[in-house]
Amino acid sequence: MPGKEAGARFATITGWGKCMPPAVLTNDDMSTFLDTTDEWIVSRTGMKERRVSHVPVSDLAHVATVRALAAAGVDAADVDLIIFGSCSADEAIPNTASRIQLLLDNKKAASFDLNTACTSGMYALSVASSMIRTGAVRTAVVIGAEVITTFQDWTDRDVAVLFGDGAAAFVLQGTDQDEGLLADKLGCFAESRDILRVNGIGLRYADGRTLLGTVWWDFLGQEIFKKAVMGMIEASEETIARTGLSTEQIELVVPHQANLRIIDAVIKRLGISRERVFINIHKYGNMSAATTPVAFVEAIEEGYVKPGMHILLPAFGGGLTYSAHLFRWGERTTPVSIADIDLPPCEKTGLELVREGMRRPRSGGPFQNEHYNNFSAAQSR
Ligand code: UT7
Image (cartoon, rainbow, N blue to C red; front, side, top):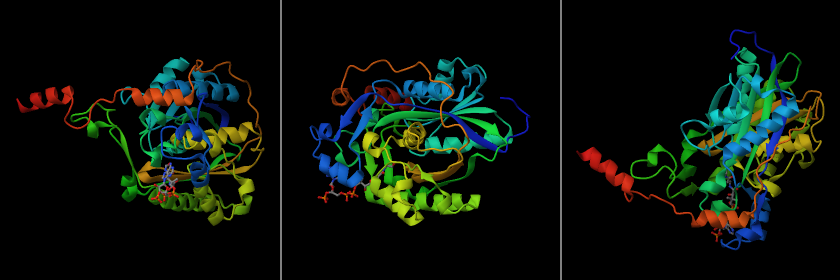
């Protein structure tokens, strides 16, 4: 890290890239093993299909990062900071950001993981921007990546239809131009942390279970819905107010894509019409930490982002965390170069990958496995 250099006035996005696993899982695929229909999923959520990854999350994140660096025209060796935003890290120790640093052959970056569930990539944008503005770092990579399908409960129609996999990355650099992240607001309704929980992952379950054993979700959909709308509105209003801009000056909204009805409720309250909102939920469902970053990258790639545009990104996630970011885009909307990198090919369909996942033996369950028996015997000695 460069140390005592003066900070920049703003941190701006100079590179962007995404990596979508190729295997598609449609609503009709889901109705082959769940009591659900394409009609229900589309009408209640807006989702038509989602992606299933055949590789670990760090591979998705690495490809997205290489693409973002090429888009920025930045050498991987010059990156000072890598933040991996996700709740599906390869492992707890070592962190996943360090694997990405290794794959980039970068020797100098500070690298860490950040988990605030679906808002992880957005929280990471705030942290990286602040570090650039203090002068602690010059060039940062921020990633939002997720392989939720690896710990999905495929027997639970309330949640299984909602999620998919994906990754996106941004390169952020300092600038003294009036552009980049103008304002942000991060928050958390901690009293609502119990309404979205993935049981079975984490040290809380280590007493008698492998860390990823039987997984089941606590998921109060309607409560999450209400808190999501509340948090996204609150954060958006505060963020817009901090910049002194009016809502009319927001030319593009790129929201977290968890449910089309949530997006509509938020923009209605903000007084923003659908024409100013970027939507890709029909293609990917909710990719947790990857959702808003992938949508932002696609909005740039598809020409919705114009020079000087004001862009609002409201998001929410388990915790129950929420956030909003307001960017003023710079001049360049095209990549400096395109990276020659891709994932290894996937020979299977999304449905085949899911069926394989269902057959994979799940270890654990409370007090039932050999590891626990050995552990408790050692404790009682
Ligand atoms: O990033 C954080 C992730 N979390 C979220 O974004 C969740 C936010 N919440 C939501 O998006 C919505 O609450 C859901 C999409 C999860 C559910 O929509 P809803 O309109 O709140 O439906 P509901 O929970 O009230 O369920 C209505 C009915 C129920 O049947 P009954 O009790 O009326 O007979 C459910 O059992 O729909 C049933 N249902 C389904 N039917 C077919 C629930 N899931 C399904 C399904 N297919 N997949």
